[in-house]
Length: 95
Length: 501
Image (cartoon, rainbow over all chains, first blue to last red; front, side):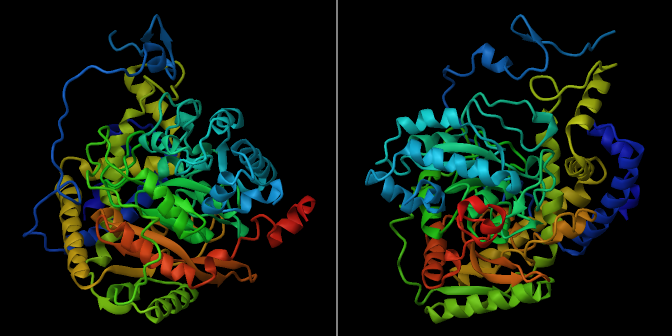
């Protein structure tokens, strides 16, 4: 079944998580176990069911595009790991 | 009434004293603060408490407002302006909220005083509060046992008289299950009844904020304030909010309550089973008609939930990237290294497991087999409940198949922990409302009494009906008056805190 195909290290990379070898080994086993359990979903006939992301019907909600008071720049930056001159300092993205 | 016994009051009792000017809001707050300082080192319910900030609100509190002068403890995944909001995670260890969640604004508008941020499983992921990166929370009935989760801090605070009432969040049972394990009342409102704005998202199609209280009336009083539409949450419902507290007290004669056929095989602890069976007999004696209903997809509930909840969580937690807020890894070698190490250092094991599982079930090649399929089975579960609610007014079951377990007892096997959510999860998957209330006790091997919770599930927006049944049950039994050994003046109190005797 599909769970044998779970490559924890690869999926962790997709999720932007660096795992230690111990974590990778442990999660491989635990998640394999959980996916094996989730395989029971295959027993159910879903051919007549439509996909919906919510339990109840949801509709787009629109509001007027009006300016209103919100965070000041100081507030927006108040939790920044690094900042200067009213800007977030980010990690270098070009060499 | 002495100051040290004030924290034993429930919300309705406290309001009476405040309105009669027997006590002032600042006096109440100071008494509660002393209680927390005394007992919380042993309980571990709180992550932060700001007496000074709360006193400012207390000094101007209008006690005639619906919750005027009443302190309410807040789960630490709900934003309160100026307070920490750690979500129990290292990644938000130093975070301070810059705004109030809508539920906090509503509490403040009603005169309540948000006071103290309570412990939780990291990002509300867990059933025991052991996944908090900060501390563990003890169960006030037996300090060696868990308080449940993920709102374990809120539950323990209320059960140990360290809070008059608290807010929790419920994604798969995180309000109801800890309420059950600590002998208090916990209500999960209908999806959309209460705004999610300012509540750190775990699984956006499942999350709801709910009250955790010492009795059913208090739950109704809080829901009166919390419920209502919000322009900041497009999933909030516009339906009018009834006065839930005013509707209490109607009898339940002729109401039909469903017992689920498929619940028989779900590994219920024998004592829990007996206690709940007696509770159902009692509801029948009050005039309710007990009807067997079938929910044919019960066996798939847990699997559907853990596929959908982890998928949504993996997307929601992508925002923790160490750029705008939260922890950032030192000296990143590249942007990828920045993200990977920031998140590896910031998240604990259960959060990592769920992010990986959620990423996997959404990934190309597995999306249809897991995520899309789980969404479809969710619709089948919803149909099951719709059919059941054609026959009955509410569905009755245990809240948790087991009473509180020993700390560390279930940490090694995540799947076993997940399976214990079987009775609470369907309310989140189907968007309906649910309540847990005390209905008796099981016992530990050592003879400690361990609370058992009765769960009632109602159809969407039928909170008034649930509260009606819960109130009728509560007022004709004494379970809600049983206080934990670590409540004010409790048995354990005398032993651990001789100064109070």
